Length: 118
Length: 145
Ligand SMILES: Nc1ncnc2c1ncn2[C@@H]1O[C@H](COP(=O)(O)OP(=O)(O)OP(=O)(O)O)[C@@H](O)[C@H]1O
Ligand SMILES: [Mg+2]
Image (cartoon, rainbow over all chains, first blue to last red; front, side, top):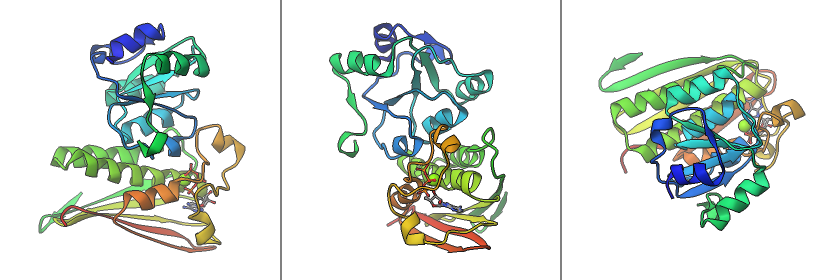
């Protein structure tokens, strides 16, 4: 699905790179451990996470993850937003919890980027 | 940045405990490889390996440096730090082994997956460590078969 559609499903606020909502989303990676995310080798994979620090954006950058979803309204600080903006990474913030967000995305047909090593 | 005979060498200093700059070296490496025009899959492997090594230097060491060597046949990443070194390398290489404290885990690290990840991304991987001296990683990614 398009990132635009995901944004509607999770009622997200977009904090960076709003011009990139036409990205095609293939899979989702839900994780708190950045090394876990870094083992995921699929393309067009989105990261959904409860963390909101600089390393989340760095991890997305290294793994070619085009967009990151922060849950429960956990907006990152200005430094994190600036890094994401500079690296062309879309930041979305949803009010939903991790469980609910993943449930909604799963029900819409998206699958995990970590299952079976992608 | 030095270039000679189609080789390119770059060195980055890594500061221990600085989480706002952590990842800058790997980011710079990724940017440069992109500019040169390497295939995305190669860039991603180099970037992930460099980033994991950089985070280990930031988290577990007293500081160090990362040197990138690009040759026509392969990309080498040399990571060296100033200690404290690793007592049991076989244990450190095991998936799930980590000595990271809780405050590091809260940042999203400490899965004990970094070193195995680096190995997985590499065509050749060597780790040397001496307690009291430091740790050295030699990572090599082939550009041609
Ligand atoms: N440069 C280093 N200096 C000293 N000890 C290190 C160094 N790199 C790794 N180690 C030791 O090896 C362990 C395993 O490293 P590894 O990168 O696999 O996992 P981690 O850093 O603990 O967690 P993760 O990488 O998943 O965030 C570390 O917990 C630490 O004890
Ligand atoms: Mg590590």
